[in-house]
Image (cartoon, rainbow, N blue to C red; front, side):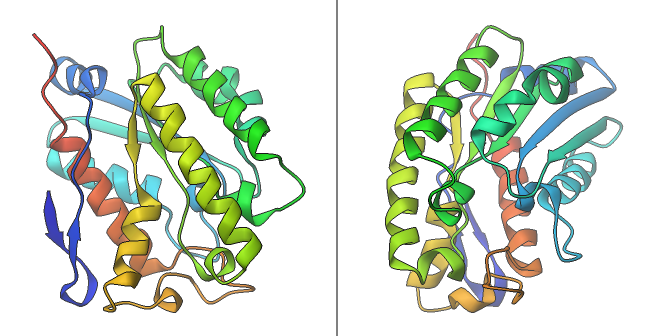
Length: 232
């Protein structure tokens, strides 16, 4: 899947490897389709930037006219997979969604010393195991590529390690990974967009900018609607 982003920059995203069958079935069979977005500040929203869950909801409703698609925002700033796992029962499972989008990894690198990567990896693995027997699809969204992470060598090293761990866990679990890290990194390495354009300019420049958030949300919606067809 190829689209054109800010400044004419081509976004190359290969799309999801696995069908999102429960989500597609819900769109076909019901008027209401529920998605839970679980994560930290880039899910919750910060500094008056409209976060991806609201943007995704708008895009999916437009693409599926006549269906009521609700994206429930269950993001809490500063959290990481272990705390998010503790909210699974009330914030995810009880909502009975057809799809869960779990954004993880950034705070494991940013809040160095508060989390161990082993702990975050284990929590992600356990959460995916809990969701596996349920009638729900899962998309894991990985780290954001912003200056607060990439301009600090220690954080960058942790982020790259966390990224590899997320790829390993999602591959083993057979769930889709939305590669936000690689996508944003590609924008920068192309030379057509700088890291400063990817963050909102506040504090030490951790949070994703308005423009980048909008583009990420659009690509995610496109990937969901073009995911592989369910197996017969």
